[in-house]
Length: 127
Image (cartoon, rainbow, N blue to C red; front, side, top):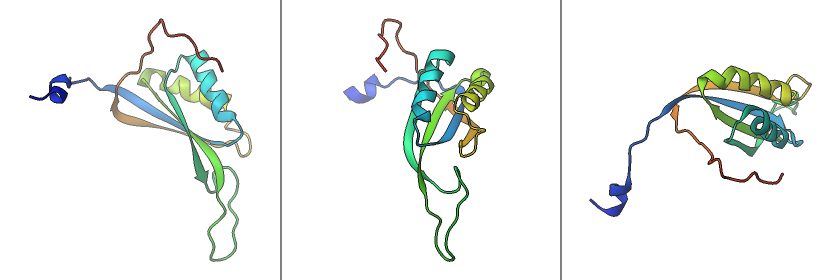
């Protein structure tokens, strides 16, 4: 056995749900992630830039042409099933999804995930 395979250890997968929010590119993603950490204890979230068509506003285009896409943000959070409904509702309210052009929110089951736990001694980052 070489050094790499001797270090490999099996890990347990935990039941999880993934919540994704497609948001306008107006800073809502950063405010949402900060609020998720401060108020819901969510330590792992991701935001990436994406192009969206007809998600934030009605798509219009000329005949035989694709509609113009717009810049948006996709926020992904993975939580335990018992937290999922509360986090989903929190994200809906905090990101103001119900406003015109506010985006959309999706939740689905994952086959499993590994937990991400920050050590207690780790200092908070400055915003």
